Image 1 (cartoon, rainbow, N blue to C red):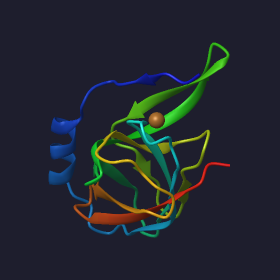
Image 2: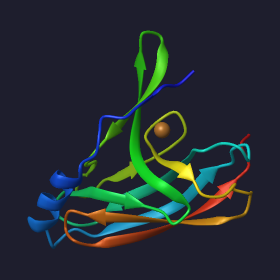
Image 3: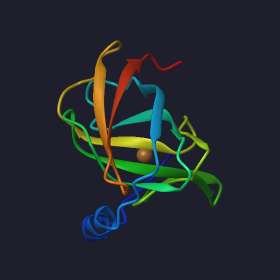
Image 4: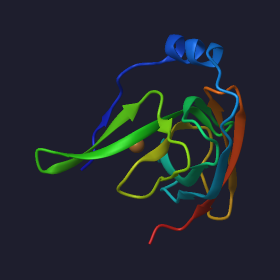
Length: 145
Ligand SMILES: [Cu+2]
């Protein structure tokens, strides 16, 4: 059983981060996929490997997808013997490191899905970075195993 804890929006913080831009970071998104969910599910989790090839850390300050009302970064942690999801508002992408989002670990949560996701569908997810760059991630829907 997982519980989704929403700790509020980071719009103001995001705006400030965009203004204090860091120009040197480059982020590579690879192996993006979404785990299939039942057609009535309002949420789905997306996974991707994000590599910061730059020399300084960057942060994701906004996430969006045309297929979802909103997108959030969630971390998983053990809490009182069960797994809980907590939202992280400005996830850091450390320089020279691949941040691997994966099942039972951190993920991008697509909330308020606008249509059922079917296996094989390609779902665009847009990440806005503190450096000012915008990253388009194309996640393919895969069957849950
Ligand atoms: Cu989640």
